[in-house]
Length: 197
Image (cartoon, rainbow, N blue to C red; front, side, top):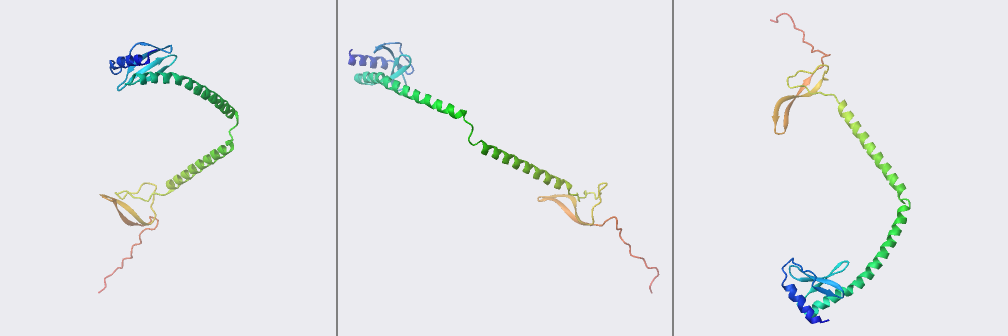
C-alpha cells in the first residue's frame, strides 16, 4: 500500500547483495511472491508464479514499483499474444498436414533428371574404360639400358630411344638409335680378290 516506502526497501536490500547473489522471498506483490537477484551492474526483482518474470530495481523508489506494475500488466498482453499465436500455429499445422498427403508435383521431372544422371555416369565410365584399353594396347618400344631386348619382343626397324641411365634436372637422358630388322640381315659387300698394281 505504501509505494514509496516499499520501493526504498527494495533498493536498500538490493544494494546489499553481491554479484550473483539472490534473496529468498522478501514479500508479495498482487499475491505473487517476489525476490531479488543481483547481476553484475543491476538488481533484478523476480516475480514468481507458474513462470518467473523479471522487473528492474532502479535508483528511484517510484520507478522500481512502476517497473513491477508494468511487468504484471504485460502478463495479460503476453497471454493474448500467445493465444493468438497458438491458434495461428495450429492452423498452419493443419495446412502442412494436408500438403504432406498430396503427391509430389515435380515427381516426373525428378525421375527424368535422375535417369539423365545415370546415363551420363554410365557414358563417362564407358569412355574411361575405352581410353584405358587403348593405352594398354600400345606396344612397348623401349629397350633397357643394357641393350638386351625382352624375350618375345622384336622392335620394328627405325629410330627408337635408349635410356642411358643418366639423370638430368629435366629428366632421364635418352639417346636415339637406329634399329634394323632381324628379318633383313646386313648385306656384306663382296671382297675382291687380287691386287691391283
